[in-house]
Amino acid sequence: MTLRSPIFRKLLLGAFLLILLTVVVLDLYVTRFVSAREVDAVQRQLDSQARLLSGEVQAVPVPELQSWSRRAQQRAQSRITVIDPAGVVIADSERDPTRMENHAGRPEVQQAMEGRVGMAIRHSDTLSVDLVYLAMPLTYGAKSGYVFRVAVPLKNLNAAIAEVRWGIVRVSLVVTLAALAVAYFITRYLTGRIRRVQQFAEGLVQARFTDRMGPEPADELGSLSRSLNGMAEQMQDLIERLSLESARREAMLSSMVEGVLAVDHELCITFCNESLARAVGARTPVPDRLPLLELIRDPAFLDLLTRVLVTSASQKERLQLAAAEGRSFEIQVAPLEIRSRRGAIAILHDITDLERLERVRKDFVANVSHELRTPLAAIQGYAETLLEGALEDKENNRRFLEIIKSHAVRLNTIASDLLVLSGLETGESATAPERVSVRDAIECALRSVESEAKLRQVRIHCGGLAEVAVTGSKLRLEQAFVNLLDNAVKFNRPDGEVWVEAGCTAEGKVRITVADNGIGIPSDDLPRIFERFYRVDKARSRDVGGTGLGLSIVKHIVERMGGTVSVESQLGKGAKFTMLLPPG
Image (cartoon, rainbow, N blue to C red; front, side, top):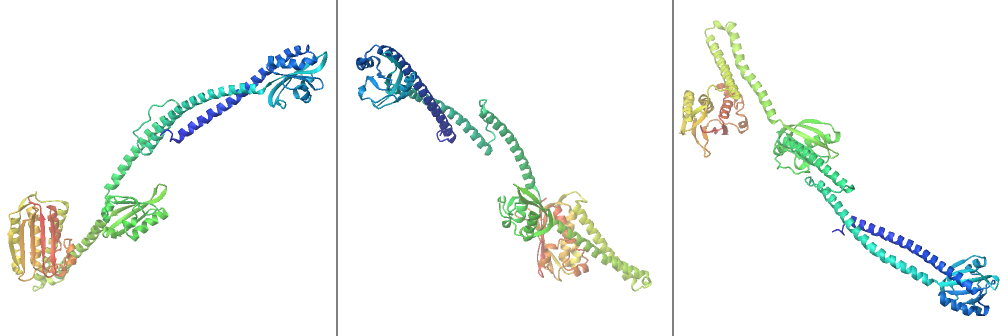
């Protein structure tokens, strides 16, 4: 694994090249230094030999010079040459002087003829070897201008230099291997530290903030490790604070009743809380980056978000979303910056119930006004008629007063029913909750409508009144039964029938049903019959003295007791009201 590391290979290669360069430079320097020393030593040796032999040659006659030079060569292990002032060789220990060319042009000979010691290294054409020459002036036979020259083969010098060079190579090789070993371990050590720093940095990227760098030496890598440790602590603290803040926002947005939706510049969902998902019937959680068209296919809503993305200005509109089963929303859309790109966030307030309540309130005001206006107008009209002279009309004055009385009773009934509704809505109760027998409450209600049923020739059947009880107000429960029975009698046909039953369901709840075979209720009117002042047959309702509040009172009473009331009906076949109450 170490050799696979690029930085390890680079550091080791750099150390190797540095060591190699150092060894080469050192070899060149030492070789040159040794060569210079060897040449200087040879020169000193030749100089001493030349001075010694030049003093000896002065006593040798000319005929014996050739033999003397050969004997001197054996003693000095050097080539001996004697040259006259004209450059002619008169004696040479290696060759026949008569066959040798003139040496006056040799550099070392020229220097010696000028009275100086000459030195030269060159190839000898006579011997076909490289030689080191030293020539000095010689006075021979009381004549000056002669030259005495000694020479040794250069191979001796090269051999000495080569021996030194091989010694340097051997030492350099050992030193290089040792240096490479040291460089290997140092590089491996540094690479290991760098790898630990790298792994720690990668851990920070992967949010592993619990790891820490161990103690490091006081160098640059150690300073970097300590800096990374400090940065990890700061990042951990920052991430924890951001996570906490994100969790808080997520919890708040998820628990909001209002729907919250965030999209990016491509109209892809980046956030959607559960309220909005439930409203549009989507599964939670909504996948991130889901195209908005796959969640809400509403042109008006898409156009609203697009305008906000284009203009970066907040928008507010009321829309009905088909994806939310036609529910109405007040939608507030604001621009949102998402990762340096433009997005939008929409908050959807469900105002369906508010609109319904507003509609009910308007209908209630209109209905109350309409219901009160008719009896008040009648009372006012007949009162004015009496005051204008009809009071003296004995044939009609009593009838007028009876009409005024009936309308006053109607107003009182409306006022009473409204007070009952108001008390039920505000939670006011005349008595404390008690255990009420359903059979007793039904029997009391039957007695209240008995006379009306006989008058209208409607028969009431009590089939199976089980001994069950509920918790609540007996007076209110009787009032609910009276209202249901009264409607069943009044909106029936002659010789009609009404059935009352009471029992328990399989789930243990108390069920009371009031059914008739009267005129029935149109299916379009069924969802609204429990609304205040809502009447199916308005003309007949007024004829029978109905206020349109009875069923609304029934619903409020049942709901106050923790139950529900429902209706089933077909036009011309009667209606069936069912109350489900918790047992007492």
